[in-house]
Image (cartoon, rainbow, N blue to C red; front, side, top):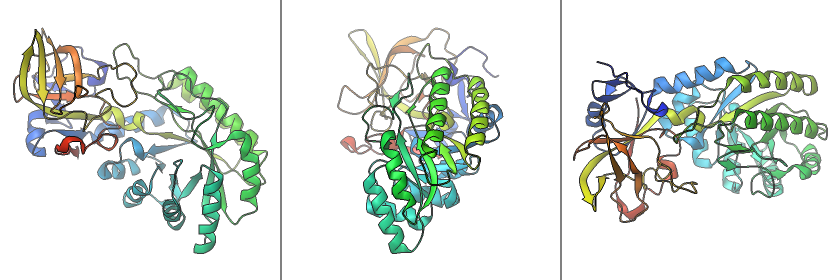
Length: 411
């Protein structure tokens, strides 16, 4: 029997049969047996494909959709995403290798990051990917490497705009930032690029991430396109691509609402028309990470102990902040909030109690859920942290205290 009891919106993508959560059509306890041990992350292929398809249905056909590999660089997942999107964006030499191994054409890969070393820049030039230059030093280095290798490196300028994405979880533009080249300095560097034997592609303008306000995203996109058009007027070069980043957020916490894509898509129709009139050879690209993969993943840990301390229940599990720093509240949260968490093999509890879920690490920071309603879990039960498809293992201190790493599976 399939459960129809209302659940947190973040859990609604995964069906419940009887009392048990299903991932990719597999009951959670059976999946745990198949994986071999807990803790593990599981990502659902069908949900990844559905998210991309739903997004494309609401965006104008002329908008290119890129996946930002840093959100989840698991090789099998990146390979799967490479077949769904128009391009991959990487932020290190390691991610570049993953993207190339995934089969994405080099011409559809861009390489960003404020601290690319000469070795990484040489990797990018040799591979033929588009390097988003973030400083005058990088420009000079790429010019030298291009001359040495006898190729015209494909480059774009990453611009630090004079605005930011309002209500964003992380602000990547506006004011003084280590990211990109200040907008007012871009015209001078464009003249330098024009004097070099480089293959200029255009601009990368990323103003922020994790926003649930459609109006803020529309404003940032509008200002990014306007800035791109204005800077192109200063360029003695043809602009062929304008990457305006992403910023699309997903709901993690109680009271947060899903982002409404429809008005964003409608606004992009108008921006495409303006771009076509001003820069007819330029293609508009969105760069999304968390929004594409975040809700398609879960983190699973097994209860090792059930303890009561001065009236409070603690479920001690075999995973924690060393695997999933974001869920512990230690990756950017100012005030700790609970991700959606459930007992995956007791999903239909009518009267849940209150418990905290803590990990095995010898630190009070190792908390996955704090005083939240949960089914009455026993030793051996499976705790599930939803919204775990982005910024999981690769963004966590996996070596802390020497515990085993979490496995990752794509179902």
